[in-house]
Amino acid sequence: MMKSVVIVGAGPAGCALACLLAKRNIQTTVFDDDKRPDLLVGESLVPAVIPFLRRLGIEEDVARISEKKFGAALRHPNGQRADFTFRRLGKSVPNYSYNIPRPEFDRVLRNKALELGVSFVNQRATLERQHNADCDLRLSDVSMQQAGLHVQPDLLVDATGRHRLFSKLLDLPVSHGERDDISYFAHYESFDADNVVDGQVVLSVLDCGWAWQIPLKDKLSVGVVLNKNVARNFGKNPQERLENIINADAVLSQSGRNRKRVSDVMAYSNYQLVSQQAYGKGWVLLGDAFGFVDPMLSPGVFMALESADLLDRHIFAKNDISDTALAAYAKEHYQWHRDWDTLIKYFYDGRLLNLHKSGEEMVKNSSRFSLGRFMKWYIGRVLSSMVAGVSTRSQYKLAVLKHCCEFLLKDEDVSQYKIKSNSTGVELESSDGKTKRPLDQQFV
Ligand SMILES: Cc1cc2nc3c(=O)[nH]c(=O)nc-3n(C[C@H](O)[C@H](O)[C@H](O)COP(=O)(O)OP(=O)(O)OC[C@H]3O[C@@H](n4cnc5c(N)ncnc54)[C@H](O)[C@@H]3O)c2cc1C
Image (tube, rainbow, N blue to C red; front, side, top):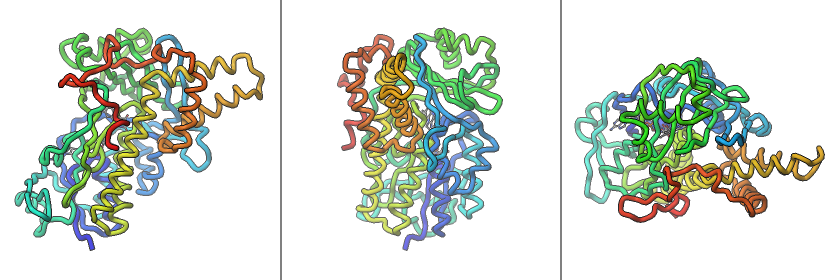
């Protein structure tokens, strides 16, 4: 019988798992260093998180602080724009999601965990590497004391996000993604959201990368994503770079012509990273500490919550901490990353906008009940449900997407809509000179 678990990190992954464990009466302690900045990425949620929020009984609290979101869009400087609405996802699926102020969202989750009896230690956890048959890591005496524990926990969970505490202590190998991007973002007032449905998140292809506009209550979150080296050409510091990148884009600069920045500018880099080992003797990785694919399509917070649910289902629901159970958890987690990565590539490599353009052309001169119209409607529905996180892993829908692209785009030059990985469009190389492998060819 599992008695106690220590989770390091009180972000969405750590707090969600803590809630699930508390419901199973497993003594749970969460460490958090409380060193979070006031502004955090992870503001746009996909509809697939809603069932989880309902399960924890926190949807109303989240709704109170958030902007309801009914879709997303991808647009190109040449005017091409693909709008996805969640309104036609079907009855069994929530047809909306939320854009959240992240620190407040994390507080809602933490308060729920507290209400369920989880203990929090507002300190940085310290761990020591071990070289014995039973465990690879142990909590230091100081951390044990802070947690009020006399016996080492049955399982240590790394939910430290991109800090990747355990991976660094254990020197775990990682898989990097193809892109070497940096992201700058801030909150603005008087910046047009350019949305066609409420809360719609708009992603714009830029000359040098892409940008997001996420409507929040009374504010707009604006972020840009581009190659790290290219970013240096736009200014000396994150503030200058963000402003200059916005100014360099005709559409964004127009939408933000009266903008007033109301927050600091935050920078994030090196985030396309998945650990090649997910568990070991007495420990397991969760959320971003396990891996993160890419901010395009906003899978992060959903994956953090899903990660907690997967661990709960594979390990705690069965009270089975064996290697077999942990391997099953890791396998399903990797599969999620692979499937998000596959879908995200359709956006990056230009196929999605090309597909959209072909669909528009197909319906232009066709009658109301033509096959072309039906196909456009059907592909739109398939894509919306995949982007929503509801059927991202459906092999049937991935196959529909693949075959539609092969059939409709066979004579098209899809590179015209590609989101560049650097200013010249040349493929990126890693520092050792080898071309980076796409994430979907890794962790097999
Ligand atoms: C540019 C960018 C844009 C993004 N946009 C979105 C988006 O729109 N939507 C979305 O869903 N996701 C987005 N994400 C991803 C999302 O932010 C993350 O996937 C999500 O926050 C992961 O949650 P987590 O709980 O795993 O980690 P985190 O949220 O990082 O939480 C980790 C916690 O651990 C704590 N910690 C670290 N080290 C220690 C230690 N030693 N001891 C104690 N505590 C510690 C930290 O302080 C923190 O509280 C984006 C990511 C990037 C890089």
